[in-house]
Image 1 (cartoon, rainbow, N blue to C red):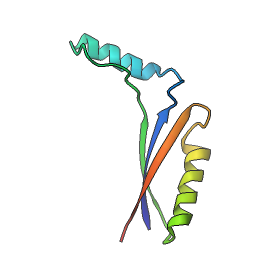
Image 2 (spheres, rainbow, N blue to C red):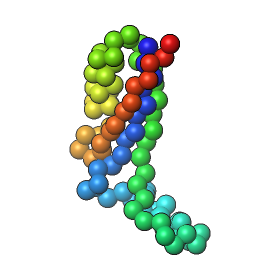
Image 3 (cartoon, one colour):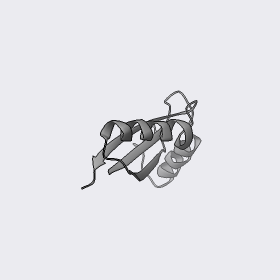
Length: 83
């Protein structure tokens, strides 16, 4: 079995209004040096297989077809074998 850890972020060419809102909030708190805030998603799940190649393919398909929007978002993941 593998533990998948996925990070999904908006592509750099796509405006991130949530990140901008948080950045403005930081300015109101007196944090004057915060720039280029981007908000993403972090997801963990198990992949019930002993074959790493199969796990990688399934995680890639899961992220590409369901967890992320391929037009606006990029994703990266790591797999950790669970013993």
